[in-house]
Amino acid sequence: MTVFNERARQAVADAVTRIERDTDAEVVTVLAQQADEYRWIGLFWAALVALMLPGLVIFFPAWFDVRTLLLLQWGVFVVLGVIFQLPAVTPRLVPKGLRYARAAALARSQFLEQNLHRTAAATGVLIFVAEAERYVEILTDHGVAERIDNAAWSAIIERFTARVAAGETEAGFVECVEACGARLAEAVPATHERNELPNRLVVLE
Image 1 (cartoon, rainbow, N blue to C red):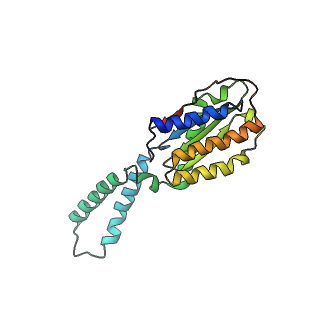
Image 2: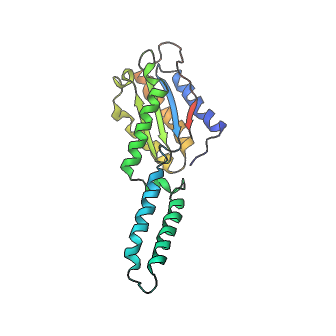
């Protein structure tokens, strides 16, 4: 996963500052390295493989007595349990639907936690990324949603998701912010200078 240093975080913050000069929308960016730890997933798969083991070794009865088989089962469970907890491995074991559901839930909780629902004109916009899940979502308050249909964000989300999958999250973030800014400047143009919410990139580690 991408390590966002201060320079990368500042690049995203600067992009937000630039686009907010031309729109009344309040944009907040959030990067989650992983939406969930999924610890139980690794243990589930390790246990499943260990339970299936007797069915595989039954074809070699001369090689395994009951005691050896039990030790082999325990050993497989422990070894796989450790391997399946590795950050690079665990997300690959999680069904796509579950990964997206957890990421979507985190995005909605961040919309509230970052106070995007409390802007004066209901113009909060959240650009959310769950990197391990390769999940991108743009959430808007009703002041923006009334002027820009959610479908309008689809192409931007698709491009950003491809960037995340290619390991180009930083460049994708800046590109996404600028693309959102172009739409917001047209639909929710700036009427006065204000900055209700911080422009910094929020990183959930």
